[in-house]
Length: 461
Image 1 (cartoon, helix red, strand yellow):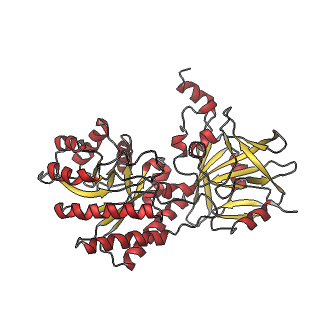
Image 2 (tube, helix red, strand yellow; image 1 turned 120 degrees about the vertical axis):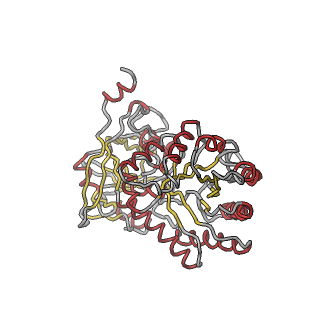
Image 3 (cartoon, helix red, strand yellow; image 1 turned 135 degrees about the vertical axis):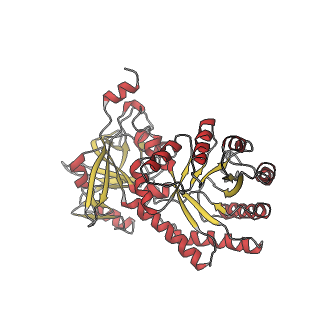
């Protein structure tokens, strides 16, 4: 008999650092998932907090090694992109690691104020303010600057944004400029809607920043939607960006920082082979070489890793409610949750996650489809990143549990956490898993299942 465990061990290099099986039950980062299920039930979202710190420290090490290898003179600064997950437990864990913050919209700034009031950040913490800004966002940024947040850096997204700060900020301040990068050819548009055109950047500096004693240019910002990947497209765009930094530095001596944005990928399948250290080394090497070629001081490097910071800390656990054979070939496992509402990236972007059985690893396996609870025909999951089919155990007289792993970024906010979701499917309970000073696993309930009363109140009943 070929068991589910045989299938996984033959298909993947398994067990891995994060996943192992003991007594036919899956362990995630050393935590027995069945014990969590027995305590809290399903459906269940969880966050394994130590993974956040581990990811941050790994990235810092990669860039530290790269800078030492290439005798790089600039400094490295790690910013967390808050839009990936705004939850307090994420920020609290991330900020244990001497990091800084990148914001995306208006209500990020009250979040920054709250973190400051709690002593989690200081007025010296870098607050990199991105996005196309409505007036209230610009007002909040100006108030931060006037209140002495000296490293709050609004990133100019268009040619007129700076006019508001020049009028309302009463102290010397710094700004950055975001470059409107060209997107991959497969995109539906050629140039990003965000940022300032390459040809307008020096003109913007000379007309509105250069001769104004109250403002100085600190940073040039770069981001491409496809992320930081070892492709000809990425290296071409990065080279173009570095050249613009070099050209701008010749007329803007205060410019000393290059922000290369976010986009480090996370493991969405067990075959993952991305070489983080190599990519950090190549980025540093390219910047150093082009600056040396142009007799330009090597800039400080900022990154804004969001999904990388929090993505691999998250998981969603489900149980199989029933089997349904809908024709001669298609067998469905109906789960006690919804992909559309609880893993919206899997539905809207066809994003794949690591999907594994939680129990019954000693049972035979079969090819199945996973169906969600909503009445939408698109609420399903039927393929993995590495193959078209998905397989799960076929237990006899036992409940089957399964998990989707590395789901920690974006899913709660895209799914409408605490609000109204498709077919009024409630948000599942959320559990935080941590380790105490002795390394023992601890867990606590962050949020209960969403109630019908909260939904009815939101809907005006």
